[in-house]
Image (tube, each protein chain N blue to C red):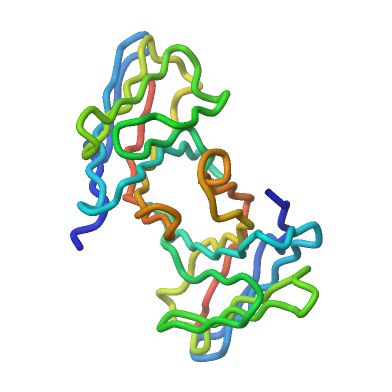
Length: 112
Length: 113
């Protein structure tokens, strides 16, 4: 069990640029989740996959956000035309069906 | 998912038991109680979960009241490394909407010497 891995750990970008984050889940886990966390708040759910199928998207996930899990293994989260309000920690978690979710240490996004 | 209420902060002396309360008065019969913690600059870490029976693992014990309207997470011998924000979450074990975790603002536990 190597844990959930997220890259990069930190990303600094200018407003208006596109960014992409990667998540590698625990190998046997079929479910993968994305959350966003702002300072002083708990994580907020964005979306989740079971295998390669995206089964739910939060209303927080605007049209500028897209997530993929093409082969049911790793996942990417892309934000297009970044805005100041996108500055946050983006967390990925994985689980085997309804077993407890295990989180990575996140990607911290800073928008200049 | 039912909402939870936790105190915003608590202190505990190192070596003593830390008892973290959580109210979930609107919990449904098929909803589990989950506890996670988040140490600064890390992702949330799963601790324990239960439905109605008390549960214990190597990290902690979970005590759920008989009416299931509240629970207590017990760290039997707190250490400085247990300083973290602790989240109590109620969740239906299922697919779709039920899969997500709904975090509140948690309890910030400070363990001191």
